Amino acid sequence: MAQIKNEEAYRAALKRIDELLPLVNDNTPSTDKNYLELDMLSDMVEEYEDIHYPIGKPSLVDIIKLRMYEMGLTQKKLSEMLQISASTLSELISGKREPTYQLARTISTQLNIDPAIVLGV
Image 1 (cartoon, helix red, strand yellow):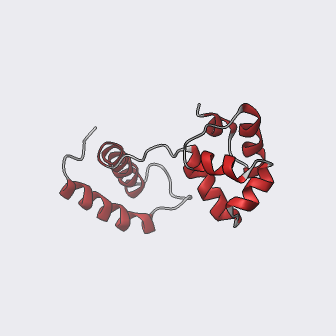
Image 2 (cartoon, helix red, strand yellow; image 1 turned 60 degrees about the vertical axis):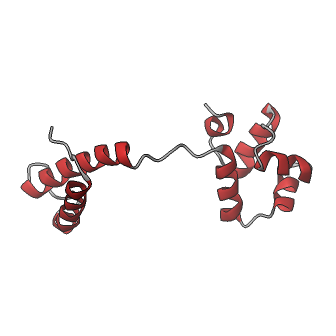
Image 3 (tube, one colour; image 1 turned 90 degrees about the vertical axis):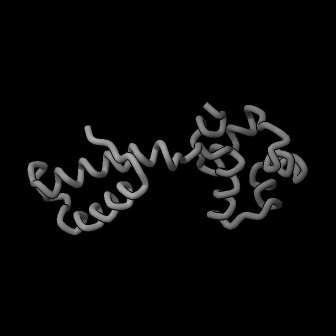
């Protein structure tokens, strides 16, 4: 398959994808030339972005902070929700402490975070 080799080609591919998106929808047959071009360009852009713009896996701390923001929780309210001391939560959020198995389970259920993410697997 063809490959995007530089930033200029990448930008051109993005521009072409923007032009194709209005022409393709869920009802477009997979044999349609616009559908095929969009599919190929999307794969090429994804491959280029995986190499040149990788997105790292978020840490548990990042996910907890995001969930706090989404739920409108302060550290005090979160420590109460998790039934841990404010200092334990502070150490967890600063990365100085890893959660115990029991705390990981509580974080997972109370904050609706996938257990695999909480356990780092």
